[in-house]
Length: 182
Image 1 (cartoon, helix red, strand yellow):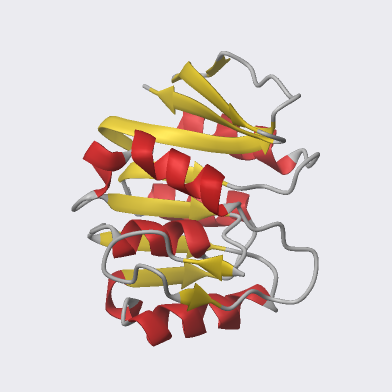
Image 2: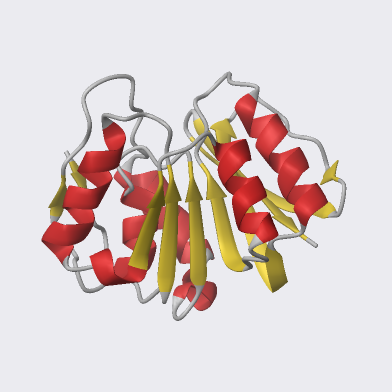
């Protein structure tokens, strides 16, 4: 069961698409948002490899101004849309049904900037590395913003991706979050 931990939609259950989806545990999600607590309200949030949309929806529930979801899996996109509509967050959200790198290039051309960028790439996928390199190149992070990369706790991500510099890593069981800033 995937649910919203806090905020306007606290305790509400989210639908999860069928298939190879690995939702973030409630404990890991709560820990992540405890770290980001002072940055979420009124932020622009980018949820890459969104899956069910649970992380971006959590940000909206906690007061994010806008969340953009990027997910290529065609089974996931209608589930994200349905979750947003059920919770009344669809007016503050946009969904890109594209590969992450393509969506980042489009957003970069539009000069989109975000306060928080979350990457929940499939574990063991080279997509995480590629997306982080592209984010380091494009410069989509607002001043004072943060990029959070979810990965296996055994994996140690590089200290830098061009202009992105790692400043923190937190581990929760098999899940880890590496935090980057400019």
